[in-house]
Image (cartoon, rainbow, N blue to C red):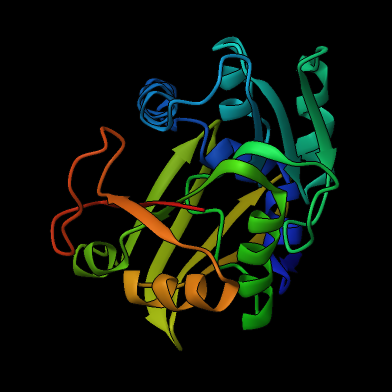
Amino acid sequence: MTEDTSSWFKSWFDTRYYHILYRDRDATEAQVFMDNLTNYLNLPEGGTILDLACGKGRHSRYLNKLGYDVTGIDLSVNSIAHAKQFENHRLRFEVHDMCKPYPKRFDAVFNLFTSFGYFEDDADNLNTIKSIKADLNATGFGVIDFMNVDYVIDNLVPEDSKTVDGITFYQKRYVANGYIVKDISFETDGRAFNFTERVKAFTLADFEALFAAAGVHLLDIFGDYKLRKFSTKTSERLVMIFK
């Protein structure tokens, strides 16, 4: 049996296989990034943060340990259900569409680990920026951590495989119609699965156009999680601070 999903981020992120494939993401690197970012932004002690597209909440939980009041939102029902076990009086999780403003204002809104550019309709990408603006208080900062598409395309691995928990995931990567695409196929429990990740290949110039249309101002740009200078050719990340 083959299971093919077209609305990929609504279905793929909600499967346990997504979390199996990406289990080895570097938690230490993520924590270093949060330390550096919150220090740079000089957020108020006990300040409020919205973690936009939070997944199972790894960034949210660490930010809460740093002393912040954190709200994590995601479209994945299963991811939020998992994250809710970690809730406390200063950490909460909720299913919410990031295209729409959340009914609260924050000292910072973080959109991390390339959790942007999924939508078929370009208007939804702009609406997400507008929603971030609406979710910020008068002194708040927006942060988008995106891949540096120039670096990714230059270093794209067309095909490989990875075995995790006895499941071999076959991955094919390519650029098509302005998207960076990854096809993922595997078999388990007597079934064949096929999923496709599609992320809009937004460059810095594309984001600058989105920011202008949304009426937000780009304040700073970094090229990695240590907040070093951004280079189009050598930086792996595109970290943008705006308000």
